[in-house]
View 1: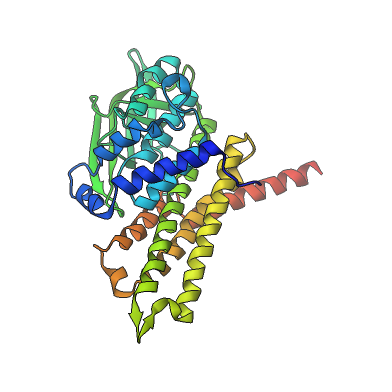
View 2 (view 1 turned 90 degrees about the horizontal axis):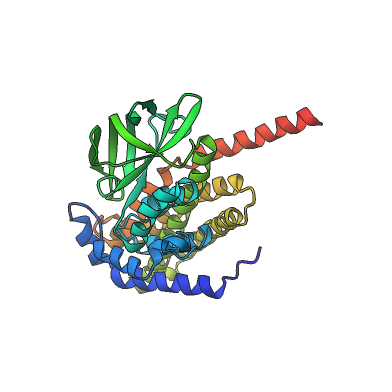
Length: 376
């Protein structure tokens, strides 16, 4: 693979970095974390003005028309700033499914609002128990007045901000994708603070009215299509977190002195710092591999699982080492580096941690081996 960015990609990454670095410094993050909605609306408006909220929205709806690779570049910069804005939920869980599977009317009604920063979207893809998104705890039934949903979903990000929620639900014969207005009758939202201080919600549907996403029911294949992109987005955000955390660790250990010399002069510190650098580089490598395969239309399922595994296991190793190398400062929950630990922990367990990814990857390998043995 050639990892050289195009001029457009380089300009996009630089623009995103400029906005996140300039508008989401640590004191601003603290200020937003103390707000009721945990949403940096000023930063959101800046991203909209730069058309970064439309990075992967088709051009006919006002977006830039880029792919998953470029979207991952923007999410990477969000991770570097641990910026409290609902990019993952709006652009990946909401806008991408609508752009791919929605009707022309659904796209025209919702996507321009996303690009303009007026519409927040989300998706209810996590599940209770074993967390298998292909076995939905919500059921859809079709009545005289249309579709209705019953059941509940845990850990829905930004549901308290969203204009629409994309919900996979069980129907006779499989799964379907639906759009729900969280303000409509029959929808209850119970919000709670998560590990990284975001607000996620348990959303309960009691005969709640819903619109089918698209002209026909899109089932398990469509849900799998979405989940691959969600996993890549999570990995991209984790890469950004680990990049910046490693830089902060390098700065701290170079300046902090012990016994008359910087901590970075100690061999043990140097070795752990090198591990952080190598781990982050590995995370970045498998991220770009997965995003590139998606955009190239190549089979990407294995590459996506590898990227998510590295985000979970590799990411945890990096932020743990970073925190340890900060000594007592790393244990201070108000010190900026601690937020990177919290964010990567949250990202690790979103849509399944490392063991979950390995189990899924192992099943795929075993299934292919059985298939090959049966056809040999």
